[in-house]
Amino acid sequence: MLAIDSERLTKRYKGSSIAALNDVSIKVESARIFTLLGRNGAGKTTFVRMAATQLMPTFGSISVLGYDAVRQAKQVRQLISVVPQEGRPLRALTPWDHVYNWLQIRGEDKKIAKEKTEDILQKLELMQFRDRPAMNLSGGMKQKILVAMALAVDAKLLFLDEPTIGLDPVSRRQVWAAIKDWKAKGGSILLTTHYMDEAEILSDQIAIIDKGSVVAEGTIHDLRKIIPQNTRIDVAKDGLDIDMLKSYGSVVDTGAGTLRVFTFESSIRELSELALKRNLPFTVSPVTLDDVFVYLVGNLESGGQRA
Image 1 (tube, rainbow, N blue to C red):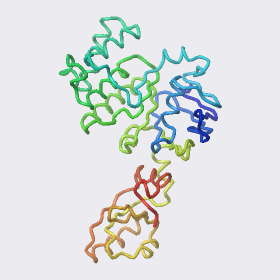
Image 2: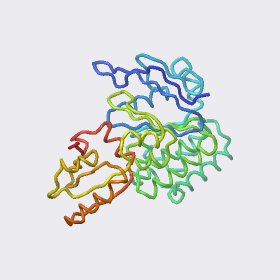
Image 3: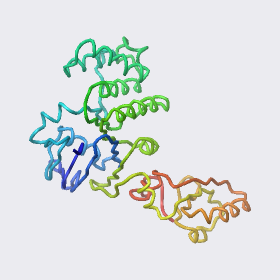
Image 4: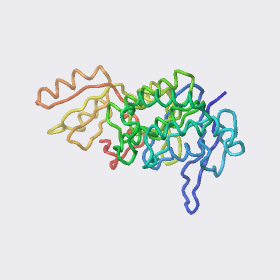
């Protein structure tokens, strides 16, 4: 059984002539982490909200864990857990209050609720702040409270809409570890994020959405093949002839004083020697998901321009 199965899913908000989501068909397998990537306003959160029964589609269908998300919303809600984008904990409640009370609301036994609350607060390093009101915690800690609430429950499908936004690098890794634990227990996850390293580390499958439509889908390995070349070299552009670099592959002006050349490994030595002769700093690395994302949906405003 698929965790999520959408067919030609479309959403038009009242008063708008442009579809927020347009004809999107996505299949999310069980016990997998499926990630939606896209620029701000691309339609990621709209898809999440429809799958989580919070928003009605204009056209098309979506089923979640075998239930129709529109006609059988009640059954769906009993099986899912959500970390909403831009959610906020209640100011006067502590981390313990949030998680423990949420488990009680979900029907958990008091003893089990206590054990689960302790476990998730320990994992996310919130235990030392367990009795501190949320109003007196940092923004990152408030975000971790929301993540802890979602991860503590026994749901079959977890919706994570930018779960690590505002978190420091250590806290992000704590959340990643908790997400991997969830998956290891057989849970399914739909993730949205703007962090490409997060998507690369966690995802089994990725769909890139642009202007409401899916423009690419596959594994990390599949998506990297979208750029024909397999290697990139970043070199300071001072005095370099861009037309000459084009003979090695695709050239992108990063807008930060460097040129990025997508090329093949066979050309790296020649390009490196060229940079060294001109005393120009350079770096060499494999093509990343970030490169693929900008290649597909980027433009000058997003930080790059093909030369």
